[in-house]
Amino acid sequence: MSSRNMSPGLVRVNFDPPQTLMLISGIGPKLARVIVQLRQGSGNLDLDTLEVLIGRPLSERELDQLDFAENPMLAAASQSSGTEEHPSMSRAPEPMFVSTPYLNQDQMKAEPLRYQIKRRTSLDGRSSR
Image (cartoon, rainbow, N blue to C red; front, side):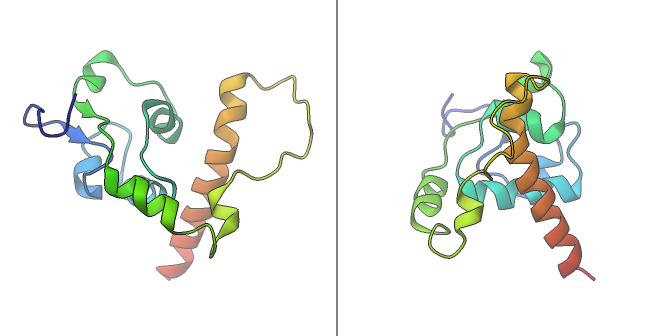
């Protein structure tokens, strides 16, 4: 599905502002801002990443309302910025243990993303005080 060839009413995950992202069930104002910051720093979001952010899988009805077309501006911005100034934001933190048998593969993929979200929301909270 191309961003030019889409039905009216679709939420364009990699293009739309926080107010539009809030139309997705489970996304409030704070998470919408975090999503925009995350995609600006890390590039385009995919379905798996959005589901981790929301904390649940999306239904078929919800998926029909979303457009995950890639935003070329995000890909260019994430490649040209951030890595020199903020190296810790461009890669996942090193795990403390090599093996964590109690975590399934999806949980292990989600941990670096949760770290980034937690860090960005805590920074967001400090700046608004």
